[in-house]
Length: 287
Image (cartoon, rainbow, N blue to C red; front, side):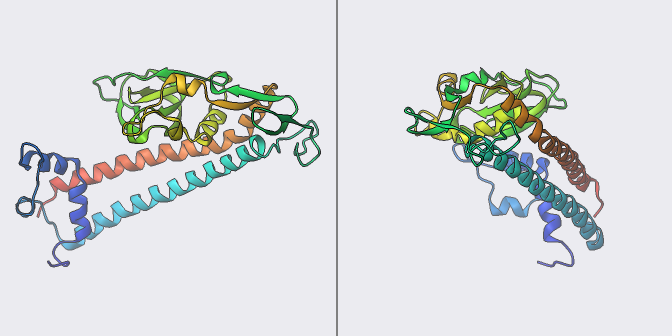
């Protein structure tokens, strides 16, 4: 009602606190559909410091949010660069030949493949995804708190003190996020809502880009409750070059891009922790 007494952004920060989520759940009513109505909202008590203090806290919070957003945009551009390189090499067949020249543009030999009904580079053939990766199931997360990320179908959901995989791609297995793909070059816990994709050729990032380009959600079973299984993934057809060197060379080229992404992700995790600390301070402020 009065922006000089209560900043709407400060109020938003209060509602962002996980403690408020628990408060709202505790005060909701209804056995079938929980309801937290307007009257309940009006009863919420919160400390209201001076407007100057509120604006200072909001400025700190928004500065961190802006930095996180900028970092996310940088990561998107770095991944887009890696995707462009992937397309050049493995879709447009412009990977470097023996002389370092683009294969197709420099007259590289192409042969007609009857299965695909198109020309592919000489020495390439139709293989399966299982030629590149080993698919394993995730497990129910341990009941602990730590620094190791737990991956569900939509990315990191929390942190524990144990891991069940390392240097792995993660694939959403079931539901709305079926077919989503993430990677992590450290220790992780993959939950039972996801699958672990372990590289057979030690090409984590090539495998990640391959999985992203396969549109895995379209290959799931079930319309109301989509599901991806090991069998479905293993039998996905994919072009394969007989020379392993091409995959190792590509991995070397894109490695700096993903190293930079990893550094930025770690920075964002720390920034998110600072945000959480800032929100937790709100409860200790004096009105």
